[in-house]
Structures are given as C-alpha cells and as structure tokens.
Length: 207
Ligand code: GAR
Image (cartoon, rainbow, N blue to C red; front, side):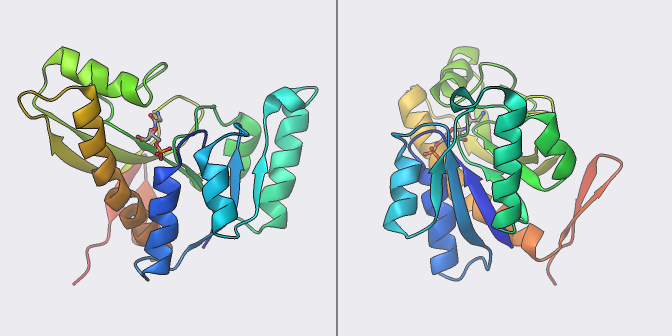
C-alpha cells in the first residue's frame, strides 16, 4: 500500500513506520508526508528519508474547500491507499473522509473510548490518566470518521501505569508501545486481515 502520513509534531510514529518498512516488517511504503506545521520533526524526517513532503495548512487557503481540493489532488497524484494520522492535530474534513472511507487510520495514546475526545491529545491524555489514578492505559489504532476519536477500533495494547509514574514517564512508555502497534496494524491492513462489518472489526488470525 502507498501511505500518506499526516503529522503535526515530533514525528516519532512516522519514523517507526519508515523503519518498519526498512526492516521488512511491513511492505507498505510512506510515499507522502503532509504536515500543517512547517517546523515539524515529521517534515525533517521525510526529507532525510527522501520522501516527498509538503507543508499544507488550511490557513494558507481561502477556505476549507480549497484546502480539501488540494489535499485530495495530492492523494490522487501519489496513488494513496491509506492515510495514516500520526500525531496530526487537525480534524480531517468530511470531503476527505467521504472519499477515503475506511482508508484513514489514527493512533491515540490511550485505550479508547477512555481518555479520548476533543482536547485529548499528546501529553494532555497522559496527564488525565495520572489524575484519574487508573492502573492501565495503552494505545489504540482506529479508523477515522467525522467524530473525534470515534471510529472503529482496529488494535489496542495495554500499558501498565506504574506507581510513581508522571505524565512524562508514562507517555514515554506508551509511545514505545505505539511504535510497535502502528506498524502491526498497517501489516494487518496490507495483508487484508481486517474485516469491518456493522462497525465491528474482525481480525484474521495467522495460523
Ligand atoms: C503520539 O503519542 C500520538 O498517539 C498522539 O500524539 C503523539 C505524536 O507523537 N496523538 C494524539 O494524541 C491524537 N489524539 P509523534 O509525533 O512522536 O508520533
């Protein structure tokens, strides 16, 4: 599959996906990186790996529909099969979710539906987890629809909250899990092992 990764910040999940391809763990290839942030680590990583990349922000367009038009034409030009959100802090508009139904995925640093929704991103999530004094958190890969953190869940992995953890130590541990979980989900998708029926995901187990 040809992947378009959308990222706003550091871009460590993008790196994990590029490395998974390099080490042969996935066969999908990142062919385009898009960021709304011109100073993002993700754009730098793309350049270092000679992957076409673009700073694309709705702010640079007269309206959302011109932005969507440009984004959709890029997706077509690069023959994108799957849009992968990796720390992308913007909503994907219905013009794109409509055209790429069940072909957009996101990673969230908690066990959705817990600690999801508007305002729940990055460190905010880990701070909320610590504050709630829960013992288990984790990471979730899910399909993206028009509601924040709402799409059907593909894969989840638990991470223990250790006594003495703060948001930072916990966040680092969850991130290590994300770096394994995201390539794992991409592998399941590229091998056609994920079936979506009546908003439920069924995963074909390997023999
Ligand atoms: C990751 O922890 C990702 O799960 C989170 O942002 C971080 C991006 O890190 N995404 C969200 O919170 C989305 N709601 P990265 O830029 O190093 O991949």
